[in-house]
Image 1 (cartoon, rainbow, N blue to C red):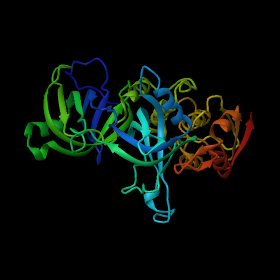
Image 2 (spheres, helix red, strand yellow; image 1 turned 60 degrees about the vertical axis):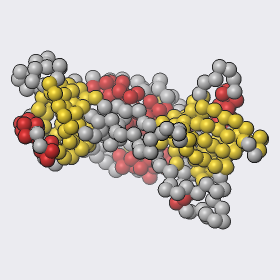
Image 3 (tube, helix red, strand yellow; image 1 turned 90 degrees about the vertical axis):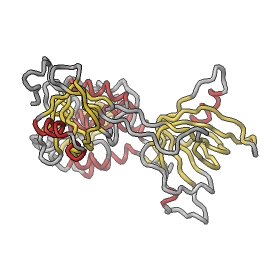
Image 4 (tube, rainbow, N blue to C red; image 1 turned 45 degrees about the vertical axis):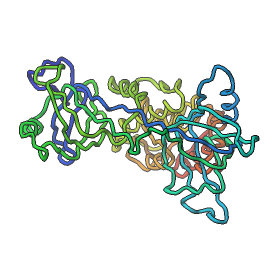
Length: 396
């Protein structure tokens, strides 16, 4: 448990600690961290000579109404089309994803008014586009569930006064930090070499001061000053931010876990897919500790399928069926297979009674892979469970 040193003037417990990645020695504890939650950069793009379908066509129709507002589209996958100059199998044809896309405008294509130039904005998702995507034969568009049409070309929209370089990272600032001996010594020396602390872990603590999760950071001190949060405490600004910072909307989920893991099932059920992904991130980071005591084989587990309308909902429900509220039992098919191999509190063989399975069959029975080809995620999960020696009883 991490505590404030005597004389810090704090009646609570620290919310974060900074620790050496190698020997886990704690450099200090602090009350808060700024720069922890950062919106991903949003860029503007154009889909040229587009033949829209499905939700994209609907968004264009809605955007033509007054008053004009950007129309949310969700995630957008772009998959280059191959031809004789770039046959199937080339890495240049790999699909990539944009997240939280919005339609911000459109117009008839100048060379063919039956087609549309669509202007969108969104954040880079995973995976990134190929180094040199092949665009000569156009692109297929989809959202992971249905096809959104095609376009002849795709490009960035760069403002005339936009800087050439990428925007700098938001640096972390340790607020109300009580430095330990090593950190205090580095600050007293004040040299550039001593202020380069090296690879570190930013430990996220719960309300009791126990380690909840962590993030790797490169700890190099830019400057520091006395903090208003307590006597002898410092606000220490680092030169860099997190390598993969969570978005600001994740803050409320972190706060929930700061207060402790969920005590009742399905507290995630009322959220949409993106927020369910953030909840699943919390479960994975804070609840995937292996080597927990294993239940004996042959048990029967009950899976509440009422809210399995998307992939994160599937794994949240499976985790709670196996390990209770907030429990982790995989976040994708490979991770589910790993959990079935042991070390996560469940021993195979066992029986899983899947209630209201029709909901998942309807929602996940036909999805699109990154290349836009249809498959059944529902069947994939059933196969993983079967291969892992799980008898699944479907109850529609």
